[in-house]
Length: 194
View 1: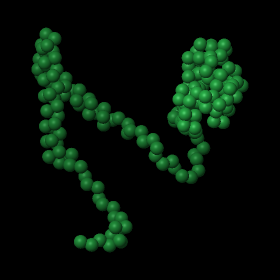
View 2: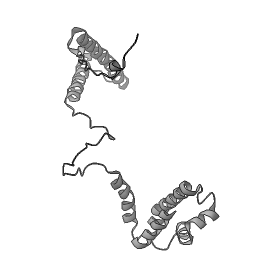
View 3: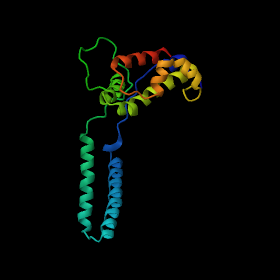
View 4: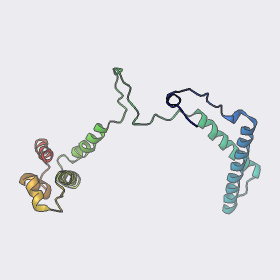
């Protein structure tokens, strides 16, 4: 059997096959599946009620289960379509001129991850020492690991040299007061130099 390159590169749209839900076999299968699910749920409910000591008419339980299954089917049919998957391709061309403020922006999430704890720790040395200082230490360790293959714990002498005395002292000894925004900017600049 041989296939030409034209056959491989040609594209013909095939007609989509209609689902067989409307046919008799599809309806019978749906009814049988609904009856099986109903029977299973009714058996569990009746056993649970009997275990607790309650007795309810079997027909009431069957009617309740069928009503719940019908409600589930109707609400499933009326539910909105799922949101598009993230990571999809952005439309090419001009922007519409509006901004989707509700969209999750990774930069905003990262900024909030620092902004909220910094705001919460403002003026409180204990909070700063508990929340922010370990994060800054993790950042320094990660920077050292990525750029130089070490951490403050694995090679303290070399890490101290690479970090510099002010940054090393800041990370290793808790301060008496939280640093000012200007001091934090200097610390971040030192971390970026690594």
